[in-house]
Image 1 (cartoon, rainbow, N blue to C red):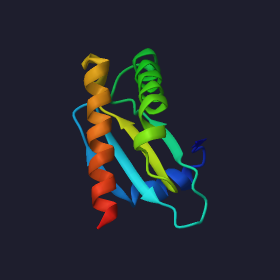
Image 2: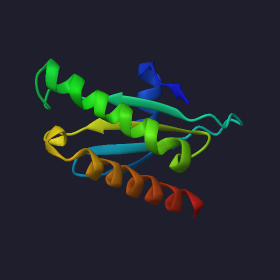
Image 3: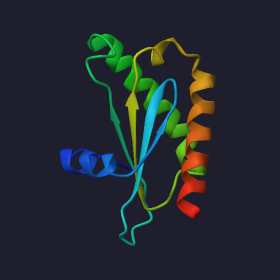
Length: 112
């Protein structure tokens, strides 16, 4: 897994598929190159809260991805998680279920 760092990578992912959940929005974009590694990026805007709140949300999103992406992630695709307001109030296990469901929906949609 590689971390997305350039703005152009995030903008490209924004043109991909979008799967909203109550805690975050998952963006998935198949890169189209022959590299099977997954890309992952996180973004949390100031609408979510102050710096402490945003950083906590990013830590939670990173932990979710470490647990779910190796099994459920889409090979050769970039995944971006956008934190939503109130995402820190949701129980971590429920966020994990949301991510798993969003990844399953993404895999099903890309299989068509």
